[in-house]
Structure formats: C-alpha cells, structure tokens
Length: 191
Length: 180
Image (tube, one colour):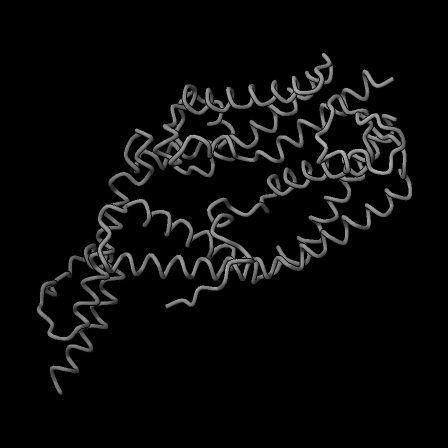
C-alpha cells in the first residue's frame, strides 16, 4: 500500500513539477531524479506529456514561424514585431510572423486598388468587359508583385498555394470596384 | 439620377451600421461570445501548428490532433448558433430598408451601368424598370452591391470578421463531431 501511496504522491508532485518547470530550476532544487522508473501507467502518461512539452518548447525556439520566411530566430522576432502592421506593410521585405496579418494587409490593399481602378474606369470611361479586364489584371499583378517582390513572401511555402492571396477578400473588393465604377460613370457620363 | 444613387449608398451605410450595432449589442458583447472566440482563436493556432509539423506525427499526436479538430468544429458550431441572433437582426434591418426603398424607388432608374450585365443579373439590375435598355440600373442592384462592400469592410475594420481558419473549419451546417 505504501508504495502505491508514494507513487500517487510523487505523481501529483511530479505533475506540479512538470508544470512549474522553470521555478524548480531557478531555485536549483531539482534534486528529484527525473528518470525514476515508475511501474504504473502514470509514468507512461507523464512521459508522453513531457515529450510533447519538450517538442513544443524545441519547436518554439527552432523556427516558430512558417519556414518560408527566412528571418532571424524567434527571440529577435519579438522585438521586430513591435512595429505596427501598417508600418510593416510599407517596409520592404518586412517580418510577418502571423500570416493572418499579412492577409489583412492584402485585403486592404485589394480594397484600395478596387477603389482607384473603379474611379479610373468611371472617369475614362471604360465600358463593358474592358472595365472588368482592367480590374482583374491590375488586382492580380499588384497582389503578386507586392507579395513576391516587395515583401519576399514565398507564397507556396506560407499559404500552400498562390491563389489564397488572390482570393483574399475577393467578393467585397469586386463589389467596391463595381460600386465606384457605376457611381462615377453615372455622375460623369450618364446625362 | 445621381442623387438617388448617393442616397442609396448612404442608406446602405446606415443599414450596415445598424446591423453591426445590433450584432454588437446582441452577440459580441456577451461573455459567452468572447469566451468562445478566444477559445477558438487559441485552438486554431494550436491545430495549425500541430498540422504544420506533420512529419513527426506519432499515433498519439494524430489522436490528439483529431480530438482538437473535433473540439474546434464543435466550438465553431456553437459560435454560429450564438451568431444566429445577429444574422436574424441583420436580416430584419436589411429587409426593412428594402421595403422603404421599394416604396421610394420603384420603377426609377437609379444609375447607369457602364456595362451590359449578364442575363443572370439582368433580373436584378433591371427589376421593374420599363424599356429594354439593360444599362439602366434599379435600386436593388446598387443596394445589394453597396451593402456587400460596406458591411464586409465595416466588419473587418471593427474586427468582427471571423478569422480565416475557423471560417473554413465549417460553421453551422457541419454535423457536430462527437468529441472523443
């Protein structure tokens, strides 16, 4: 019974030790030999949990960001991330730890582009299919140029395929383009 | 003609603002929504990270990954249930505006289209308009387009837009996976 009790307490103690790993090492009291063989399956569970934690910590210190972006180790990344997103959007080959941030920048770029192209098509005026072709061409070219040349983001590695960047916010940027085009055209050329 | 078009644009801004405001009051402010959203964001990050290191997938990790995804789907489902109230509120705001418009702009040409819409959209853009000049645009077409634009941008700007990974993770219509 004694050993059962001991193993139960040591399990709870070990679990608490596993969670407050840092505090033990700082106090330097890590006297408990880690590899004490425990017969019960708790040991198995704890080893699996420990293995996952080690993996996660190794993973974090290794390449915490998508491999496609060759940027400095995670530690240095933290002080770079302080730069707000919209400033980084205009920086050449900036650091993008979170791809959602990058997609937000692409989304707003698509919207701005739709507005400008809509304005131009309305003023010229471009009619019929020409307008759609103009919008389609400029938005594709701009998105690809921005992500590959200006920001050096490898599309295949980060998003798995090239079209995610294109599809980002597509229906609403098309709607923005159409509304601007129709409004400007009606204002200037409808009478 | 132009003044009508601008009026429609302004009114669709107001309708979207009302819709988002209602949603904020009904849904986004509630504790349950915030808790759910935070949980989903965390899980999405965890699942994405686990998926990425696909190479060293041991049997255990696969099981854990599946369980995580199951939980994520359930949370998504619950989130869309919570959002159901807001969808209804926006639907009401949208159709209320529509009925006001149809009274005001019935049969009036609101804008001139610089293109000939496909036959599919002609029913929309030429609704109840006399004549066969399909470049005439009725209020419905313009209203739908401007609502599409403004609402999505409003949601994005206010940060209410669902994040991408959970949006693809299946929402209301996927059957609940029993979490193992």
